[in-house]
Length: 129
Image 1: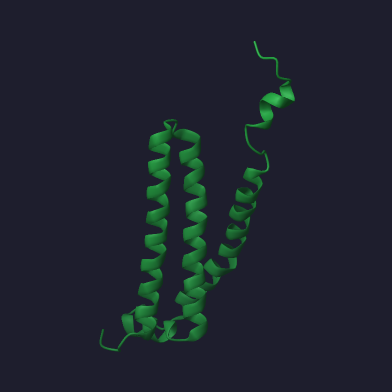
Image 2: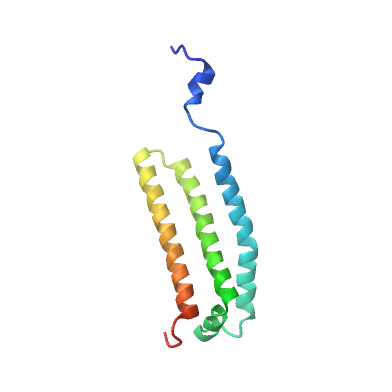
């Protein structure tokens, strides 16, 4: 039996406002992905071909490479936000949850950096590579 009031028992359990920032970040990244994905698909459809030379010429344009990098960043962030919710909801062991969340963060950062590097390499690399 506890002599603490119900309010006193829940005060140390964290803030209910914590999920709001996550919810907003997920929605904002989803809204950012809509025009970026539409731009990407339409741009690819308007290319004369999907060969390396055509894509390289298209990515060499500053606007195309910038928007492609923004697409990769938004996609990686949105994906990370979605997968951590799954882990937090379905992994119950604290150790496994922490390890999985760390691995997810590293994997999403690594994928985002690798995709950004690939875009920049194709856009600004030497023509023969």
